[in-house]
Image 1 (spheres, helix red, strand yellow):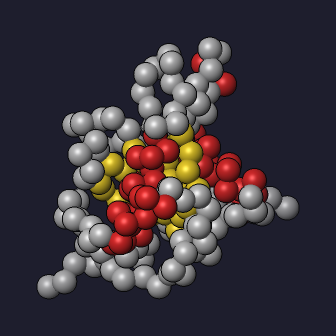
Image 2 (cartoon, one colour; image 1 turned 180 degrees about the vertical axis):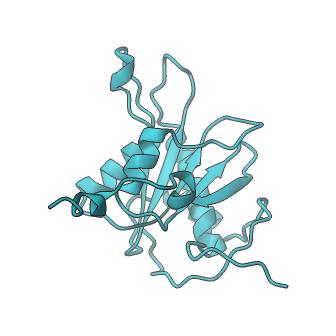
Length: 181
């Protein structure tokens, strides 16, 4: 019997693109205090390129993806020029003022006029555990819907996929504000 596939699944080449982009974004992390670099790559719903690696890296995007996660994927229609917004964590000596990679990517996309997302991928240097978004990042993701994919990676490239709904069940969102009269 075939396994049920999530509606948020992306084609393998788009997953690979997100994974490469979040690894690239991690290189820009400013983390002198924690020394815990994190990168995130955000795919917008409309499918345009938001930021891309140098042309010399484009050949990596067309190579077949080794699905190390073992999770099923399904074909999803997408504009050929998928738009990816990258972000990294940015720390501050006043610790509470730092911002996570996921929120940086989302804020960058919002500032460019994009508010509908298909997926986000997150990378760190964790070897034994998948990087998971913090509670604040989960709530910011939730602001823009519950049925989009979150790819959480390990350093070796393996990943797990969850929806925002799975990461933040019974959440509070914009529609809840409409319930007050």
